[in-house]
Length: 357
Image (cartoon, rainbow, N blue to C red; front, side):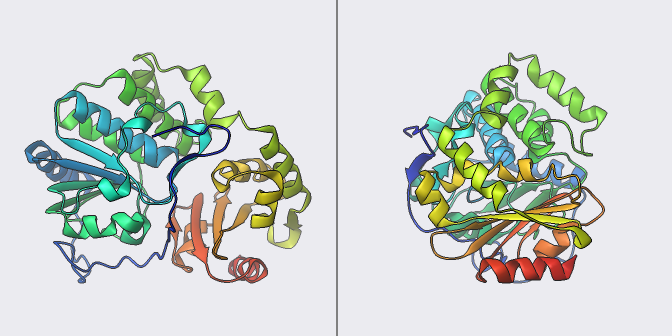
């Protein structure tokens, strides 16, 4: 993988999609809904046995991966690779990584989607709520002999043969570290860096309500492997190209506050991206700026994709469960952070959100 740090790390460009369908045809993943759901402890035991016995382990995270998705996947990848296991990792097209994840070790070891096993022996997905979020890796998931789903979002479809889902976990990276411990495999520095990034990203730099004493214990343990916390934190959260900062100014200038709904929103259009020479991956952190609005309980950033669809990111301070808004539109997430994709235009999407508040 060649890193293009001027904008995104672009690996391969094809159309992506997020249908949120949870379609379960083929392989061992069936159309029938799950009638029983194992506890996290039961699922952890099953996942540990499955990974330990696997001939090959194929790892995948969701389309347009964020820090928890990438960090979780790469964390387990480094541990299994160091143990001499046959392991491959990838994510769907567009095979693009946002530039602020450039410090994560192992990006150059990722496989392109078309090189991913068509019928994996054992496949694990990370931070991925539905089959549709796997894009062009969905057929591999359906054909896998064993499909292990690792996630901390309550909205997860439980589409695997083993579903390690724990909504109480601060991040998917938390569950991955527990799995590594259960496998009795040693951590290494590369894995620790990736898992630290996963934890830092999904706890909002250790600011969200999910930041428990256990989270700090995990961060302390990972930091003992020499995680470059200062450099990693700056690349993850603070460094941006000047072109992005100019786009940020325009996005903030056009933002709107609906006071009676305690709702603030803005939009990033394809025209804005073109005029400022910025990629969509670079604007991932825009919502963390907008959500600082004192008068707002709920924040939204609407991103116009190249095909005209609108990708929506939602954040809440906690009084409003934005997961329910996202689920009503085919998306998912949790109480504090959620998202969905819509075929409606920007104004219509905003009206839908307002009507749900």
